[in-house]
Length: 548
Picture 1 (cartoon, rainbow, N blue to C red):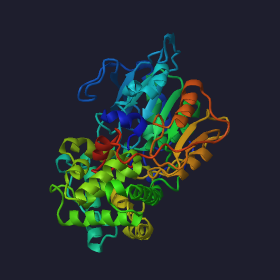
Picture 2 (picture 1 turned 120 degrees about the vertical axis):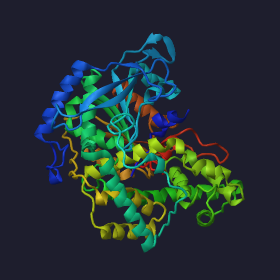
Picture 3 (picture 1 turned 45 degrees about the vertical axis):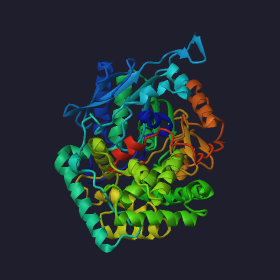
Picture 4 (picture 1 turned 30 degrees about the horizontal axis):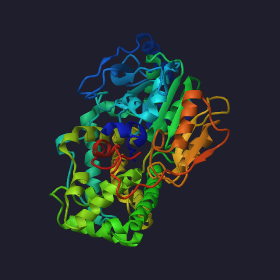
């Protein structure tokens, strides 16, 4: 269950000891050795700082001169801080300290704002460039904007589970109700993928976890010279942000959790994926309803049921004859899954489906065909996603459990259920030890107030996750975008949400109680899809839409 980079922040820019010991003694647990190792590493990072210089073109192509890059050294295993080290890449632009509305007014610098866009497996190296977007200029005036590639991602000790040359397989099938033969085929693929992770990544595979990501974040804080962290996490970034809040509450200055993932230990990660599949069915219904209301534009049907029949017709045709030899039912489903994340994508997907059914496959091919140019990034992102989620928690190891749960769910939520299961099935055969998830909780007064943002109909991070995060982080405040489903709402087109975000980041103000904002306007059928994490994030995540 991956999540795309936040649309309104890095995503849009990319394209223009509190728990039980872990099962099996898994590394990375919040034990005494890891606590000591974290403290040692933090002290070293504060003394060393970060030697920022020009950003390598291979790291951040066309980076502006004001953007600088460097590395932070962390141990592979925090229980052994003097053992094997890895380097995390970091990017930064300094606070401009210029009021965008009054160039003569100097704005006080408030420190560094570190951003993580989710995944697992996504990088925020481009995030500092967000300061060029108008709605982020006030934040860029007050904060150094800091992005980084988490462990395993990009050039930060990259993980790999398969040869990138053979990573994209297209065209592929995507049966909503798979046969027994197809299930056996996918089980074999999942086992082979898990073995590939062990073979290509070796003994270091077990050290890529959400707890390690949280510890790395504290080291980054110290290396930046910050006594307390100002952090913004989207999607999966909210999960290890919540871990960080529970592990290091006194190190938090301000924290924004956008599109919060459910941190309940019983949900991480198997049941969270089932909940996500159910939520995607509702968003798919929202999309079909929108298409039906614009039947005069697309001609795909004037009821959601007729739109479904148009979609099914396209699936059947593509199963018989893939478009351009590369776009089959799996690629079609992937392209439409992104519409569950971002309703700005609704027009382009509807246009492509209509064109295909009327004899023009080119728009669909442009949207859905995998690009060989992104294979390395996609394979790496998939490897990190799989390693982190499989390592983080126990997973059912009996196929019968997966088959039972997903068969039941697919009867009422067929759109995404089985593709989600196949994405995560390597965790049933995972070769590394599993942890028991941290029970995220903070007591009143232990943690500064946290701002949680959520869209009520978010499919990638169902709304229950925001409610649960709010319950577990004492003093946190939830702002809800009502009747909306875009995944990632901070800094986007909703001025109500942005007002709460700016008040918190710039002034430390939160509403006295939970607040809500009206939904952003629905997309117009003749409006092209806005820039977002479509090609970079979608293609980077196993040839499918980014998940958490």
